[in-house]
Image (cartoon, rainbow, N blue to C red; front, side, top):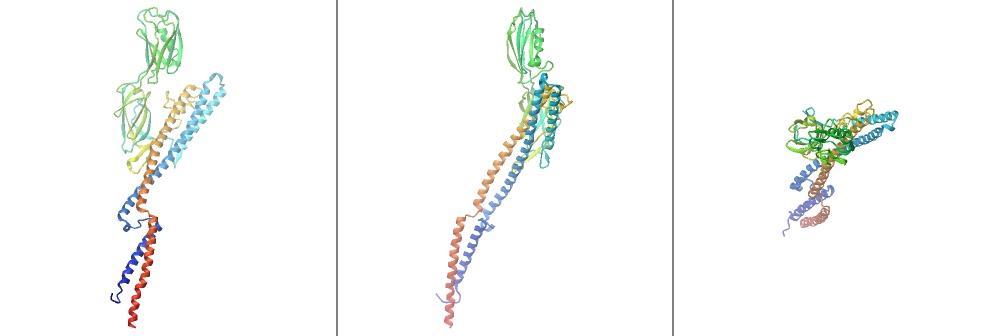
Length: 480
């Protein structure tokens, strides 16, 4: 090889040393940051994937925080409802004790009423002060609104949830099958139809069982009157229709309809008629529930209670007096405002709205069978202990049912909406984090080995540069 002043070996070695130094610097950066991709040139395609994963993870983690806060909010509401439930149970206990008129003095009854008044005041206080982040949860401000409800048609409307739609929803309810009372017929022959001997009859109904006696030579109207004398006990009323005595469920004035209503009749002794058919036992006969078409869906009303769920909407209502016959119709509108709207996922269509109606004493109890509210069982109210503890019990039990339903709806929303969303989002976050890590994060074993390799190469290159520089010294020795 010619000996010249242009040392190509030195230049080549210097380039190698520079490249080695750059690779060593890259390995050091990966080890110090923990990331394999620290700039776009490290892996352009990988960087794009990592940025997309980052965007998804930010949205998922935000959704997780939303759901966790929503869970805490609903747990606060449930806590308030639990305390109201406890107070209602205390009121029921007091009302039951007050039924025993014979052993209560007027002072004891007044003391019981005072306890009920205090419990009612506590219910209103809890309803008006149960808040989360400044929002009242139980005073009705979080209820989903509805308009256009007709008089005596839809009663005790409860809108538990609505879907993600921003539009109002019209609900049309049409009775296709009317509810019917339980009915049984005692068939008596035409002509003389009197009893040959004293007859003992047992009547069973929804309220209970009673035994009545009919004297010898009794006629159909006597049988009717004997049965009607115990209507308050049995819930069964009687009427003479032609040659028969017809039994039906009711209070003597109004019929009681629905599948829970029943009537049964048995002859304990006697029952022989002077002529014609004898009085025969009647098997249990049950009433039937109404069938209602709600927005094209056929729904059997549970003793007048209609429950409808579709497209995220969940509502219930009782059939009023003007919805008791076939083809009777009412239309009302569920508004696209009110309630508590929760973002369950990352997309806008994962919103769901939960409604919580007021649990004040002026609203609780109105879903009971007699329509009495808790406010009416206060001192001086139309259903206080002085007016009659039976009505007090009806109101309290109606309120207990309402609060239980509200707790169940909240619990169901937490379990099947929020908690499942949290579980799903947590799994997504875990999977995306793993995928991002596989692309972005440093493999420390590999990077450490690469750093050691580049360090050895760099030290070797520097040593060889020293040898290459000796060539310049040889040229100087020739000139000397």
